[in-house]
Image 1 (cartoon, rainbow, N blue to C red):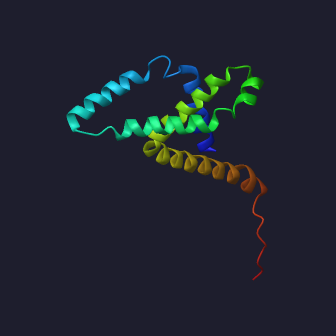
Image 2: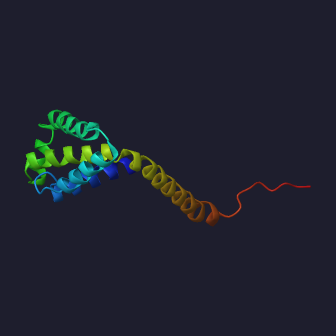
Amino acid sequence: ITGFVTLLSFWAACFVSQPIKHGILEPILSVFGVFKEVMGVGDSWLCRAEELYGIVHSKVQSKFDGVAATLNVDGVRLTTAYCEGAVCRGMCKPLLVPLKLYCTYCILSTWRLGYQHFIVFPLGDMSIPISR
């Protein structure tokens, strides 16, 4: 559930914000450039993001035509938003995995408490009486 919510959230955010078209990634790239100069980090992170975008875009280019027609949106924009979201999720994976695990734990804990409160305790003590 949390993975699907994350996918849809990144997809919707990228569909609304259009990070490539509006240049939202430019400040991130400039900060990364300063970080690269100061720390001496290579271009592997940025190259990996570009490669991932190209791979995802080539795989899903024609898959969203039916969804775009149903939603009355541009298919190219929908595909581009999905690719941007996939790249962002891939780059944020070290943060997202623990966050998704914690959210899953919270959901299951809440479900368990609700189950005990509304199902088990209203029925009363259903144990078999033991005679002595």
